[in-house]
Length: 367
Image (cartoon, rainbow, N blue to C red):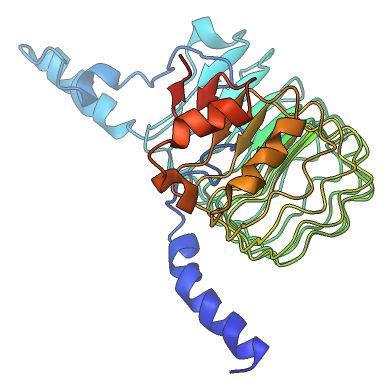
């Protein structure tokens, strides 16, 4: 079978999951938070809330008429007089099909439309004070109509139907961009986002790491659950602290020699056979390489700041490989279960003897 046929077969096996657009965010260990990082705000409901919950008083004809009016308003945005100067509003899970009726908002900074049925980004151009916009889990297919939102700091359009990164050129103050679980096949059109600090592109159809040269301030990038076969074009990210590239098609670690600020590397669920390629990343404190095919731990000796090493579900069977970890003086936590060495009855005792600094082995604290 040719390489092209192999890729086609692999795509057919994975596209069903990605195209469903209902998967949870990518990286179990290193997924960037969206909801948890956002400010928690009171749910703003349309005036129909009582009626839709079956709480409306229908004893009199007047009340029955009110209930009928309220029923017609379900799925629409209604801004109350008391909310026109609100800084934060959240319209989550309201069966909204359209963004509208926001003209009265004068000071809004954070607004959320999580879990709705919105198909188009529209009617936001006057909200120039907006700093955070959440459109997570809707039915949006195009990034558009955002040019006037020049104060935007955070944009989340995860779990939608986006196929192309576009329409972001005017958002020069954007710091966090979430595009998890869409149908994006190429990293592009990000050159103007020079203030971006966090980029989340997990669970898409990306095959190549590219077009990141202008993102000089990015310190976190998440590319898990894509179709990337090579670590490349990363050397420009001089301020990168966290790199997550789990569940791709990688066979070796490469292209990160110049990332001197890198502190956390998540590269689980690939096809790695060794960990060579991290020797110059001396600031690494966390490495996660679970669910690979690793047999040797050569390459970690220079990492004096390494505190956490997760290598469960690999093929390490020689205790001499574990001895190499004794050269990491800051090592506190190791995950090595589901390797051949894990079957040794003295597994925990040997680890503690070889690595006296350990405070945790797998999910259990050391006594």
